[in-house]
Image (cartoon, rainbow, N blue to C red; front, side, top):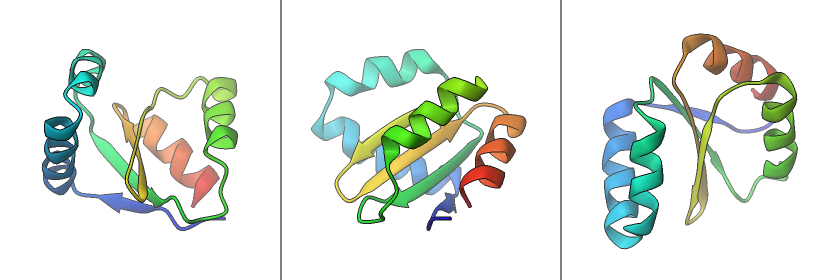
Length: 91
């Protein structure tokens, strides 16, 4: 298990606005993905392999937007079912 926190959508929006101000090339892809309903964040210092999480997402068909910036990796989900599956597996 790892240290993963659920983030409020308001706080996440503020964080991402700062990211996209700094890296505007990321904004278009993120906007094309759509609105998120549930967001989790994981400190990158954890001994969790993000590639392992990405492989699990591909295997299970869970739709997720992953944004790594600074010391954090954000995982965004559009559906509650996908968010719950992620939470049950990685919390």
